[in-house]
Length: 144
Image 1 (spheres, rainbow, N blue to C red):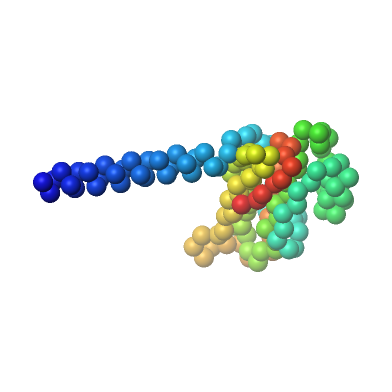
Image 2 (cartoon, rainbow, N blue to C red):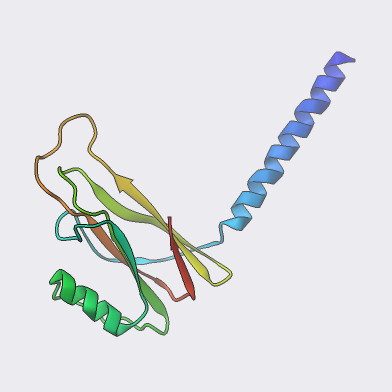
């Protein structure tokens, strides 16, 4: 009798966990492709920030502010640009990049990964990592 009760509890636990995983996957939205326009450990903003760019004027203003001279031609009827800035860091080994982009109900979620120096061995230099990507056009953009 004990074995039957334990088996039923295990079955309920396994079925419950399985349905929760399916619900989490569905709430993440559809993964979409994106392109990286720029990425570097040097030359970003001193302060941490994320910038959602929805027009050519906004993109031109960012490129002017950052003294970048290779501004791409972006069709803002189809695309948004997202610029991620880690802010100024006191050593090398820091970085930021986009892992994936998902879209759900008109909202794009940009999933990021930040890297930091491991151990104690890092170049003693000021850095300001950044990453700029182009993503499908949506009304809202969230950076995680």
